[in-house]
Image 1 (tube, rainbow, N blue to C red):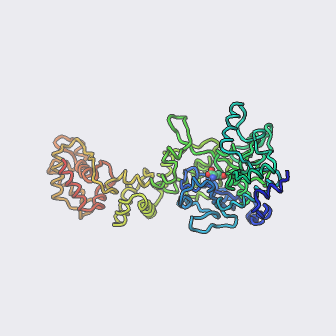
Image 2: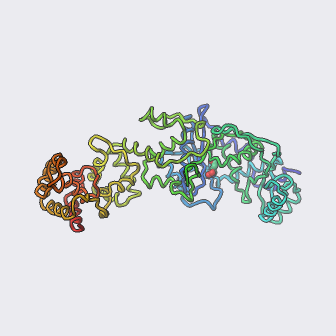
Length: 553
Ligand code: GLU
């Protein structure tokens, strides 16, 4: 067969050679051991927590070695593409502090870097140039098999109990003559380009995976498709051409790709291109139905699979990143304990220390990491972070922050400190309205946790008299003295110790009177300092709440 003629027949419009293209992609000038990594999503707009995890790791590996990370959009499957999908991915990663040194940018921005275009759909002729060279060397060929023919092949292999796939004697189009190919093309038949696999059933190949060590696998024997009928490459071929041209040194990707490694190895070999290093990351798992039943966190089943979930709930970015680092590297937690205030970037990350089997995503652990991080934030930072969150995810709260920012600041101080102690039970911003609905929600209180020790009538009577005699224009100790003075004639002992020693003859103590007020104003028996809450709510709102209770009782 005259392969040159075949190559011209199939790719007559391609005038460049791979050598010409290689010259357009010079070696980067980087320190000797610098890693070049990438994130290569399909622009579906959906950012999976596993994608953030992998990108965090890739970005760390690149930057700690003086290298760089770039973004490549794998947009060859137009069916999966979502309008604005790339922007969403870029923005979502940006909100987690991950920015790309090079690569595709938001839809209306120019891309950064000279190793592009970084959108695969714009690289069609580059792949075709490399494929032409394979055809010219007799290492790839056009296949005209229709879907029906491939289906028949499958059935035949099934009945013969043979391995499935387009290979060896089953690869019908492997041996077409130039005349037959010409005739098919003239007849307008569609074709794909397949690799003519040099693999043998006995052959073995070893993937030297940085995380898992050496994995030996059977060599590829399948004549895999490298270009689809529209000239767009399959993942396998695009991976080989792009990661070579773009100078990727470390391919860090999901472990679902391990089984394709033999194909990639073969494609690099026949194309005479050097292979990058590989690190296959185990997926993030969750427990489902029992102690040991782990499964992958799924986009379809689990809301927490999406990075958006964490932003919506209001987990601080730092908490999510910190937690992902603890599952990414076994040494991270110990390092953090020794270096509580250090920047995460100072940690020396090792791919070798990544988990080999799926790391369990433990929501309680994330919450606990988050609680510490929130506890360490000062009021200024809390104000900023909560306001930004509310702006996107809690309209009501955002409205009240904007209408009285000072009040909102005071509310933070209110829950943050218990005397000198700092509160450590808030894991995410949405906890605030769940834990302190009386501070952060405009809804009417629906449940009142009154102490049954005191009758409804006595409760009501005290509240009534209180609304006649209250004075909020005083300081905390005077306010307490007033509560004592108002409640004493109604049968509440002003001295708590004395009451405890002999409760008979009293309805309760001044502490009980305070609890009545507390429940009337907040619905709850346990809250931060009541007088501070009253001051924060203001006289009008406090009285409104108390009067509502009087009506209900
Ligand atoms: N587009 C592929 C994916 O999303 C990229 C895999 C890789 O990193 O090579 O799975």
